Picture 1: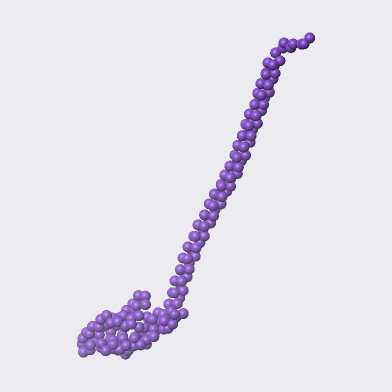
Picture 2 (picture 1 turned 180 degrees about the vertical axis):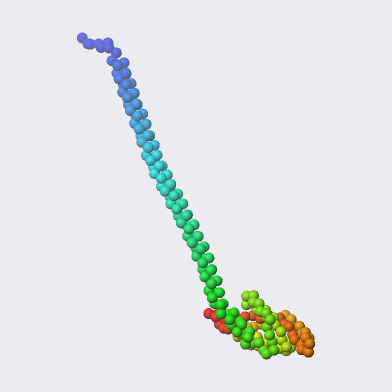
Length: 188
């Protein structure tokens, strides 16, 4: 005789499959969440690492900018000092020129001409004086023109005045102080 199983085995099998499916689904969800969390953690660490590198680069850039500002300041200071040194060198070079100016003025003064004042502005010199006659002023102009230290004489005025029995001429003459061989030095 055949045996008939009246127990609800199909239903038990179905419940077992549903329970296995639920366990598998739960395991898959847990595994998926774990994978997502691990990915987020990995990306978070990568982002933190990049932010740390960016922060370091930013701080290094700030330090370099400060260094560049210091270098610019030092270069400006160097330029100021070089300009100051050039001015001092020019003054040192022109130091003996005033001695040559007075020496040359004394040498070029003709007899009968007396200076009452001299004023120098740059290389231009204004001399004032008294001469026994206007021809002596002309002689002064010729001697200045032939001088190697003086040149370009210009007369501003010559006034002849009568004082008693003698006549005298007050004059104002402009000239330029030119060191000798200045053209040869400029070409070198």
